[in-house]
Image 1 (spheres, rainbow, N blue to C red):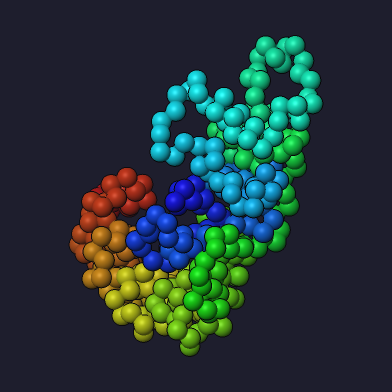
Image 2 (cartoon, helix red, strand yellow):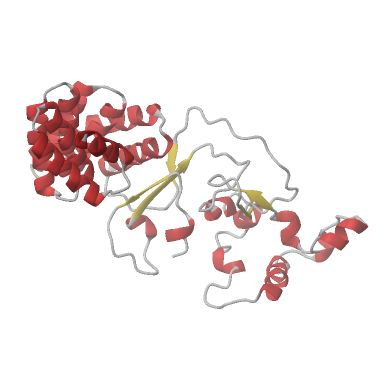
Length: 320
């Protein structure tokens, strides 16, 4: 239940909706982490994985969990927080087991509790101005060097009842595609395409499957396999707005404005609110000298996204 929000991972894929408390989260979400994570900084949503690195968790035989320390069904006042955590540590540990002698100045300026020493605040990956508690519960916490991040591989970190190896491979390919979008790293697009292409012809092959492959090739600046993948997506789902739009983009980039217009219009038939299709449709109309239609498409795009500076500049230039 906690990990729905507090364990995002490097990538996560919804498998099906309708999670209920007590069910196996892995049946509803596939959550992935790096095999070699950067242990020098915690993540805002990585505390459960940090906890599982601790000796406390390993020696508890799985009994240590979020609710061991956090009051999940009650509000706790600020004055109760530190002593409450201390009491939980002392369920397994004794005060005599801590042989650290604090300096006088340290006693004056810091709380004399387990958490301040063994679970200090650290800067998080996602923000330069936020600190979160280190849930690794280290015996002697100290700053560590950033982990080397090349190459990065993903591992599944939520126990899951996977249907079969094909489903598992598809999920992993989708996870790498998601990671490519969040990091901008080309190798993740290559990995996504390499994992998914061998699954063509299996039950994993549907419109989103080919859309992901097409998007990976598009980001890798490989227009021919990208166009082929988007066409295969349209064979599976002729109303796929994403595939029509992406195919239109490739046609427009190739100077085939008439075909691009047809693709964008098909995308808008499936999704009238697809603002990027309207913006590109306007540019294609301008390229064909169809000014009235271009302005209508541009005005519709700006209605959906009035803050788009590129389209505002295009509209201002067309008004001169």
